[in-house]
Image (cartoon, rainbow over all chains, first blue to last red; front, side):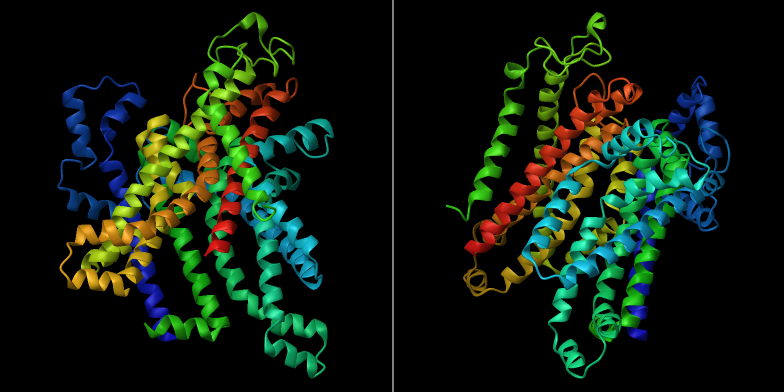
Length: 313
Length: 267
């Protein structure tokens, strides 16, 4: 277990290091000069003198290595500089909106887990090709629909035509329902299929047959034998889905006019606010890496085979 | 025949899309860029089969030109990423050692950022527009494939016929070209084809956010974005491009799936 933990920890730290290089490099290697962009955004006449002094202020006249170390040491304290547009600290701006996005993503995750587990487990006990066909068709159809379009469809039917749920904006729990369902919908068929097929796989295994032969109750078999078997795969997939949810939130927030991180980041991009961009990729990328790391460790705790295979190398 | 029915139907549908894209200028009843404010937001009619948008442009014509935009961009991404991932995969897989280690670590890091977010950030850094979106989507799309190719090349390198070629002193380039690529290429091409649907989806998502294709060029995601102001009065303006995106992606996904099934059956 310890070897496995160390190995995963090292690769996680390496990935985090890589993210900071990308975030730092992204702004340096683009053909656009951030200082010039700053002047353009704020409509300040870009004189040579003003630009040079700005460069010195931002430390852009230092060698790249020094710049990176200075930037990183600030970033580690969650200081990503100030936004070009609002002149406020980037980290504050992001964290202020993070709660909204987090609520949206977590609600979507709960919807995904609850609905796909319910339908998945129920359908696994049914032995029919018809169900296979149905989930397969559902995956194909839903996976083909762009989420922003689905969102508009929901807004049009549920909010505009029926008037059941609030149209847009944020505030009460009713505001969360429609966006989070839209966000979750794309992932649900995939999970139903995953749960159904891996449960059926698990049911065929000898230890389940043996438990049944011993007369263990069906519900106990389901809980302790079958479910435990599919759990590692489920956890790994859910961790990957977190990244998809955060990306999807950027679109959904824009459709529903929710002032979360995704909405903010798209606006920052249109305004070419580079400091925000850097902070975003470090925080979101870092978060995603850490979530996947935790998922890996969880899998190893649940399933000894994972840690034996992973730790041996 | 019946076994390949799914493949036949889906490839016919793909063909229809390709024809729509190629012959858009001849198929379109109107110029997709001509604005006609007097005739804005018209319903279905003989003159405008799918009505007109908020600037009086023919929706059907824009839809057809949108097919062109999406398919052209997506196939461009396919070819660029095919080349990049083959080069990286072959370098890492065949040379191995330090080259392999460094390249694969880079892939690890790039894979550790969710695709959509990565593309979003690259477009954000470069600025919107069709060219930068193309760069961003290509940049996030090659990584996974490079890793698959690397693994394939590594196992092929150990096969007896490649070992024989190496022993007899055939140069590395020639081994890769003659003995490795002919095996790797069809499989990777197939995987790329399967991914075409999601590339089209990505294009429409970025354009919807205003970070991709810029006006006045016709693109489905942007058409939906344009229509949102008229959601209440003219919902068809939103329905139609969305149906088009969904159908296109569905057709490509279906085609990819059918192709894979057929190939699996053959192997």
